[in-house]
Length: 122
Length: 107
Image (cartoon, rainbow over all chains, first blue to last red; front, side, top):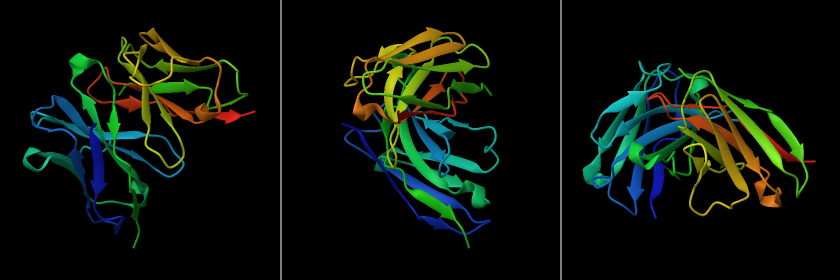
């Protein structure tokens, strides 16, 4: 069974860059036709899709975040990563990595990481 | 962006009740609609995909229906484990969007 695990700093200073990685185990990203996503949830609020990278390397971002977001793939290490620049307190949230299998399956996000809380504070 | 609106925001129900949650899209998403269950401190769990297909391992008391702009999630005979927050999500467009969530509380 596929498992996803986020890693990275839990505390980021305002104006700096938030960086997280997601390690995928239980399956190879190379053999998987899938969208690898980042989704966040501010404390007490709903889910917000940040963006994803397709298995070909193509990226798609939330229009409200596109100027600050980069998502990239590292299939050799079975990882993908998120960078969010110029963070403010409004970026404080639980950050989930997740997988959505390719469109032909029809599936939604079927595998999720545990989701660390990342706090933006000086 | 396609906006997703769920109703109600909160629902109080008892064990054994039938519960229905509605999700409306600002434009047609055909059947590219998923439902998730989220419990406090946990990641969301996929329940339904393609509007009505039950994810593997999910109890059959969960039913999804609808197409286009209007969708429902029905839970037949609510169980204690079902008290949680439920989200709809469209993936018709490249830019994915979620509903704001419906919290199912114990009456």
